Image 1 (cartoon, rainbow, N blue to C red):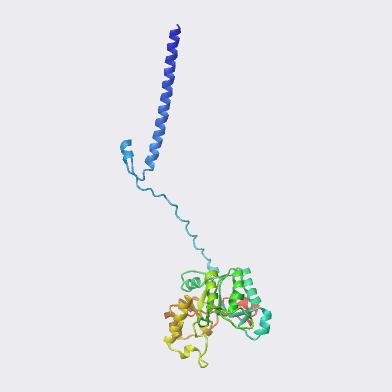
Image 2: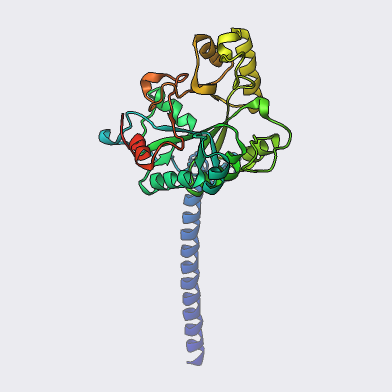
Length: 324
């Protein structure tokens, strides 16, 4: 009897072990099936049709991870027709002084602006949603390649007087605006003099380098090499040959590595205009006649609005806001 019970226990144990073995094998088979299906999906484009040995003999290609595409640039904002600019105000300034200094040293010089008035003008534009554009945007707009909104404008400063660097530049940057400063290259010296309202001073190479290195919103343009002067009381364009004009402009362009030029005194003739083109300038600015820039002007006869101390704040607002 006891022997029978022992045999039954052994049989039961064998059955249980067999059952456990079957379960383990089924689980292992299931895992292997999942694993090889996963390998099949990742086999770099190959299809496993043969036995597993054939699959293991396949030499995988070099795996190149998939890099997500860069975020696409946001689409250009479509400017509603009624907000598109028909003309652009390009403001032209020259030199600056604190009001109290100007009363002492330059009271009768209309081309010297009170820096307080300049700040008031830019603050008004900033508070009313106006934004500066650079010369590249203006070029594209003049060519009809892009549209600009009617809150667009430009700041330009002629001559390279050191007050533009010491007084005007901080005001421009305070409002996160950009500007073009047109430099008379023949007046550049290695080192600029310290700012002194009693002394007329111009940019030196040190200021040019500092602007190029640290003031990226400021573009340096050419105001010629030696043409901002008179010869026997006449404008150089009336006296010099085309070759002389071309040489002067070529030197100034190379010295500043710039694409933009402003005619001294805002005056030009056909020879002057052709010399500007052939010197390699992309654009040229004038203010004779004064006015807002339009697409009909072309890129070598871009008018500007001369802003000086005789322009009242009320008139300034009208010049900027009215499409005249």
